[in-house]
Image (cartoon, rainbow, N blue to C red):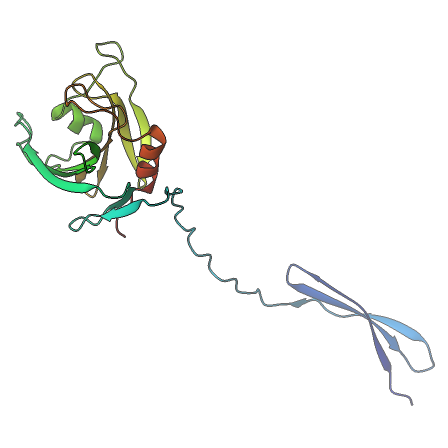
Length: 218
């Protein structure tokens, strides 16, 4: 008796299931089709996707990255700026005590302000809106004077509020946002200041690079 001859006719794999169709040469020369039982293939283990990289804005040539030595935040800025520490005390309210606001102003070689970062404790756990209204004062009201439209922005993944004027009613680029129990103010000299006696020093596009490049240490 001749041994059966085995020929593979087809192989189909769908969703991890394999089925085999075989033609077997049976005794007497007759061919017989045999359906191979379905077999479950092990599901392949896919590698875990790594988090998407944080995309930084295109930084102008020659710019530097400032890293705060105490809080670890960083942002891009024009080269050659001189950092000046500054602080002031907020007023006391019926509900919240006075606290110390500290920050750093970055000026060019002529002493013209370029960018500033203020940091304030938030002992009462106020929202950003509440903190602004409680301490520096809401710069404007939609139906009041002067008028402006506060805008929602993102800074380092945190929701912030940007105002188009300051508390003096001058055009300004000031953003307030919270992080890790602190309130931050990020400002850029986009419009100059008649009260301060200095002209604009950076463009709106350059200030946007600073805002988009602002990061907190992981």
